[in-house]
Length: 196
Image (cartoon, rainbow, N blue to C red):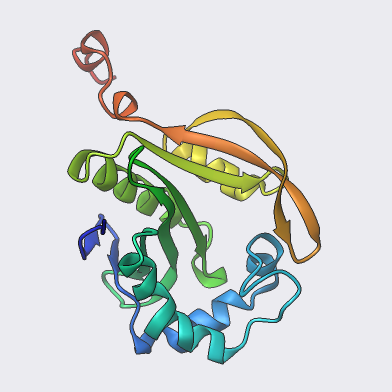
């Protein structure tokens, strides 16, 4: 099964397919030391090259959708066209209607709230429009920035997967978060409360 090709728009971002125009900003952002600390691109122990960025934009990201694994988006500032990050759905389990959201934000765009904004849009789309039953978000336990994104985006903390991810610097435990359909629809008594 495949997720449909879709462009998602938030108040400030356009989430669209990667293109060749994204190769250089993707390469610059993906080689940032903080990005590399938490996201072992292209794989643990291997340096990220411009050729890796080109392969991702032209082949890797589109094939993730075609294989049924998920969907990948380049996040672009709607007003300026500036590349601000990479967001995607991975490890999609179609029979269970479960998928995992992953992301990283370019160093020049951090601190603007783009990650929670995009994560909320993608999560709502996959649960409401695609009728998924669970979206997972996992982050290295020491990655406090990503864990704050999970909380701001309304994900529920569930626990720790021990020794679950290989990073460039070794293995890491992962904090596990999730959103299920009931999380998007507050109970009726909460919906009727006046906004302070």
